[in-house]
Image 1 (cartoon, helix red, strand yellow):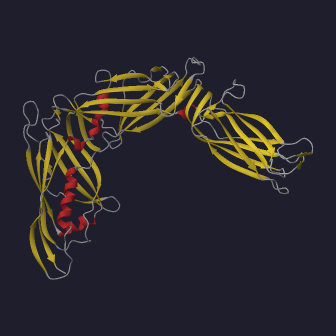
Image 2: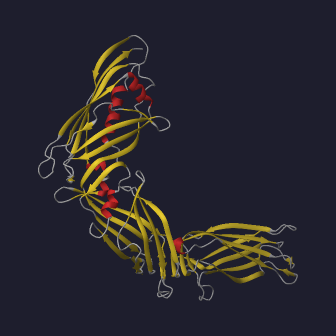
Image 3: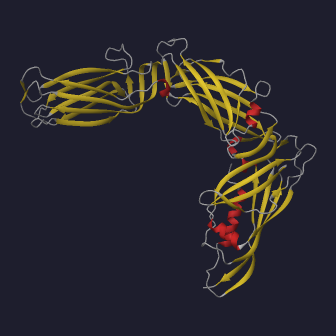
Length: 531
């Protein structure tokens, strides 16, 4: 729920009334002051976000809302683990190497990943690193050309030229550096292009041309450790395997009714669509085991009753062309004739619970290892709904926690007496009971602002149940020195508003021109004290 404009106006009025309080030194005298008026207006857009409200041709309002239930992420299919490749190179016999002479010549080494049954041929790296660590026991500087021929950026393979310090005695020369591979395209088919999940490296090492001749013994090895770290793909292609994944039981937040803590609502109609969007290049079969409406305030849980529950849903693979993805869709309209979706929403859920099962590639490798996936285009189950704002509300209670800071020194000894008068001109066909609770430092309510009548009357309606005028209600809020002390020292409040529609049990429509106008007048007797 939005920060209610009425409460903001109340805070503004308090600031106007008391921001000019004088010090406590004498001389002093009493005075009566009528504070400036504060006016504001509240409409349906102040109760619900603009983004979910739409007007019908007759200006009646409806809620249009979309909520994702579940995303099938890339790492559900496979994860690329950190992997290290350690290689040691030695000279079989003692030999003196001249400056520029080769120690290792174009050595190629492969590393194969185990990827949960996935058989990948290509990935584009969203983020990832390679750490290159060399220990050289050769007593001369060695130059290395290290490459990852299977990794290219704009068609250019990854290659680095490095120099490793000479060993000193038994202490090896060490080189250690981490390189960023983000954006690189990684060919995972190996040296001969006939493998899967396989990367390979190339290495050439020689005595520095700027060095000296050096005697190299069989114990003077080069130890090289390549570590591939934190590989997160943006894109992957290959065969993702035939696997069964269980999803949940889990819950997803549902924000539309999150501020409603009590009361009941009856909806005249609900248009609801459960949909599955698949932008992944693989076939799947999904079973929705349950979908529940959960009201955690009341502890109520209502499960969806529809033939979709427990039945196999076959999902076709997406297609791609020129970097564009063409998703496939499955839609399941839910209404009052084929389900209990109306009762689920009247439960005023703040969460939806679900559990599912998904089988990937149920027919096997029908794509010829051309499955594909993008990290930002993932299979998702979502719900779209359109709810006409034609309803019956019975003690429907909205609550919001708001800060309070009317400033000034602690204490309000200069307030003798006073009152705030709230005048409400209500154009909505429901009454609204207001209350503001003051919270202590432990967030426990210890007092309230309204101590008498606090209900704004409903607007009068015609035979078509449409408001025809505004109803004026006057509410007086007495202020005392003790009450002001509490207000000055309170930092947080709870704002509560309780709605009841007119003409129950008939449904009442809400129209875009409905509004409620507030006027706040402060009539304060206070003591002026001069320095």
